[in-house]
Image (cartoon, rainbow, N blue to C red; front, top):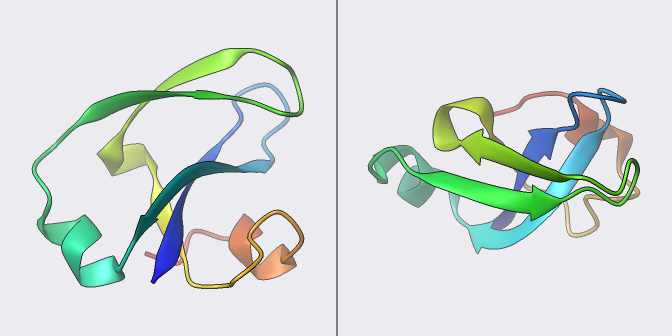
Length: 71
């Protein structure tokens, strides 16, 4: 299982959406739209699944590997 991540458009930092999913399920999910409150700029960002990726680390907020789009 991993965490769905997005990128803050203001800071370009990776943000955890709090959504847990395995990579295969994430890629097979139909296109969807969601919102996530950014802990860095304190703005709610709207995003589509095509702009997100799955971080397989257990701690996405502290793992520099999650900064890269790995899905």
